[in-house]
Length: 366
Image (cartoon, rainbow, N blue to C red; front, side, top):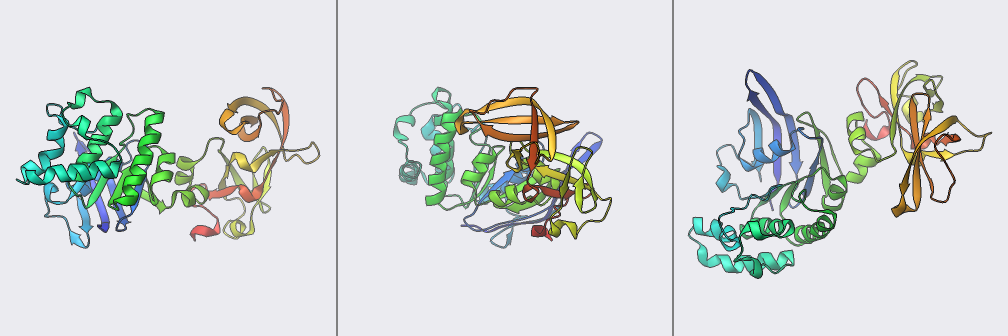
């Protein structure tokens, strides 16, 4: 198992007369045997990060260390990397057998290949023998994905790099493959960086998650902590669950105040604000509830209704002037677009961010 460190890594890419920072002063530690998820919007630098680790993209500045050893002079072929790409990158003119044994043939270790293939099949929990004589073009997406992971396993890598490995699969295949991969990573504890757009996948497979945007890492944490206590507004927006809304306001008389409503600020937030400060409230659906007329903090009009059959519920989005708020109601609750709905908001479930810096003003990240 390999301990990975990226220290102040910057990568600049040229596109004609313009130069952009694909990675901007990235510092990241991946513990030995850890599965580190990497999430973020398209173009944020996730794939470039993997290419840097693999030795396929040169650094502009900074260092990459494996177990304390600087990899600057170590070529890609000698880094012990196993990579699984979005398109699987199998050699289409070779049968599965040749795809799996090429690594050993290149190093004149061909007699070792059958035993490694057997071990890979056992770890994956699949029978690879009936695939060995087939070309990749004749396999299903799920089978190609299995072969791509098996090709990594037979190399006995010190580091797994996985870039959206399940993106070509349908929902059922993704679920099956996720279980397979979880079994593999539990049994075969190889340090892994796993790039994904699927936050549910990151939560299920990864020990910790790094959120990237604009080539920079903004937070590294467990997915649960990131969801509950995002460090910045940028992180909060990306991991926000459906039904979460962000409302701009200001500090006034110890409250978050906007034209539509007012909420008391928690003491831990209040001591870090000043009157008139621009702040942003993150209001999840769980913080909003149906209220009686006498208890209503907000008087709204139902704008749209989304059925949630898996939860036996419905998500109701209401409009209060220019502001939207959502809540979940039981599927039997009678509600129609245009209904007037009195709402209450639990201030303890609302997170407050400084609108200018984006910092979470709660105590967790002082």
